[in-house]
Image 1 (tube, rainbow, N blue to C red):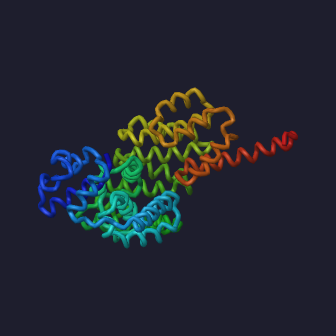
Image 2: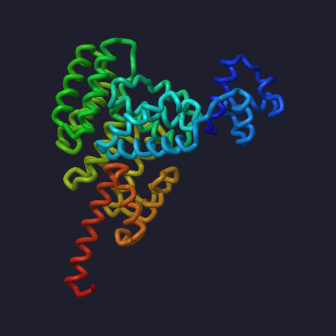
Length: 365
């Protein structure tokens, strides 16, 4: 169940001090309305519309709503691909903060605020606030929330002024990262780390060490490994994130594929999150394909029914899958989803170029 309108009706009914019986009269039974409000069931649009009309709730204009939806989609696209256009979208979306309350986009907008808070210290929203809407989220929204929970930019808000100060510094460091100002980001993350060490909070130290590891992944893999393993030692909760990022990156390099595989296996063994366990198995599957261990890959794919990339992985089990046009097209679509798919896309392009050279040399084409 994931219809925000039930919560909207419940909040407005309580604000106006209207009973369930009064609001449901002529619409449905009080017990049925209670189930709608508590997200136990999703009703048809007529019931929602009648309740909203009786409560005098002003809903957003559909044209404006569609415009905001497109901007939200762009925000997450730019965010995931580290595109600097994300800053313009943030500023535009913030203009609709008050209006979106009465829109079906409300939950998606809260996710936007959560992610944007990592780049804009003026946005004040906590993970707990957004988690309160979990039951109203669809699968895609829950995935975004889970990704944020496990991301490097997830310092929890606190009333402690020193924590808030560090969070603001870290938001600025994240901003530098998205502006590709790597050295400025690194210096600021190190400053955050020094403050966290002064506070003596191991969880906070681990959080910032993960950020430093994330920053170093594509620059100095050995240094990234040091930061991530240190984070796991300070707080075991971060082992799941640290070992995944290390493993997923290392299997892309011939000289450390085996070490990456070991990190993935260790991380999966201690993984307590179902969503993240699937992410681990996805990367382990790719590793087995790269090593041409088809038997192990076939075993792993049986555990990937919940993966949204199951179609791609299924194609990778076929002989000469890299020549498959559908596979090539899917990689084009997914190359900005993660560094792993970007790697597979580049690898496929290299393969096709080499294949063409061989065919030309042998007069096949």
